[in-house]
Image (cartoon, rainbow, N blue to C red; front, side):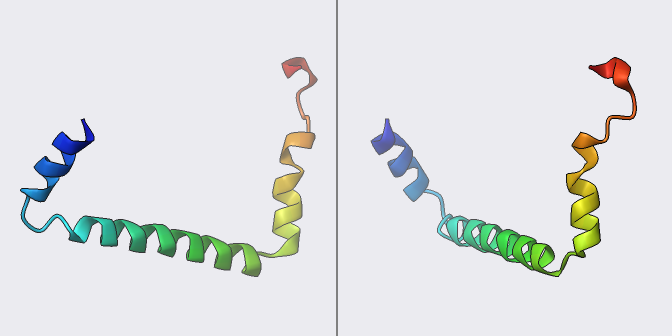
Length: 61
């Protein structure tokens, strides 16, 4: 099965750029996410982390 997919992919012209684009998108996403986590305000992080604990409507239990 893998041999069929590999041979089929090799016949497509210009396909070697897609793994590189995927790697760049993946790496960029996690670098931006890491930057956001480092620069996020601590008050915002505390507020968002307490959302599941703030039970405004006790009938949802």
